[in-house]
Image (cartoon, rainbow, N blue to C red):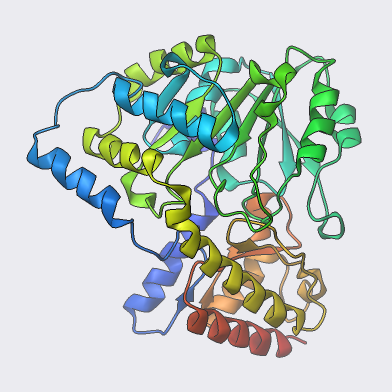
Length: 392
């Protein structure tokens, strides 16, 4: 097949690839514990499901405004004010088929071929591919487990060139669980104050899975508001991954551009999904605190067990539901050449599905999702420890 360079230049997300391999082994009768996908193992809250059922019964099944029906966008503006003290109008909100499409829309709207996008690493697997798909050039800024995987203002300042068009990062972070404080974000804002041509794409999808208190957004600083594109959704916090609804809050011009391009790709996202998102936006955040608290308890369990594995270095994540341990000690042992080899070894030997760190920009690490029951997590850590002990 004579396929386009565009498709040949992007890769399948390794999160999806590893999950598929785990499913294949399960289908063969192997007892696999899959910790590869970033998906809460909880169910969508009942009020959200009821809202969707009501929408079906009331035949809310026709096209809506491309950016989402007005009342939904109004509800999202109220959510932004309630949770983040950010003021948006409905024409600054664009609802899309998942936060992934939201980011794709933004990249296609702001990037020209050759534009550079700063991407602190470790990063979510899709950031680089969407930059490349839009013709941009990812500029990766490395971090380390020793500094809690946080990029510094000095690193950002050094990476900026005349071609820099944007920076994209997540907080809480996938894959590290790191959370930027208000003071750290203010330091970033001070750097960008001298570069008014740079957009800030702030991925806040894990906003409510935060173990240290109030979520902070870089958009809160007046000088950043118009240049920040806040990406969010209900997939993680409200256990709605399959509903596929995400959104942005941005300057009117950016929102109009995203509406324009989305109108050519998908038009509006599913009308029933929008009604579900509406219910999620209006729910009291306290309703999902039990899920957050369960993740916090799991974090502490997994952290303790990871610390018991010899030569594995790990940070103490403040949010999301991931660990990104440094496993570099085991690279080079038993024919293991990289993190992909190690993940395949742990899948074949320990029957635990994980994701290689190179997918996130650091081949000396692996990603562990602790969105699983405590019993499964304890057993998975035992299997990982035993399998690594056999590498010589």
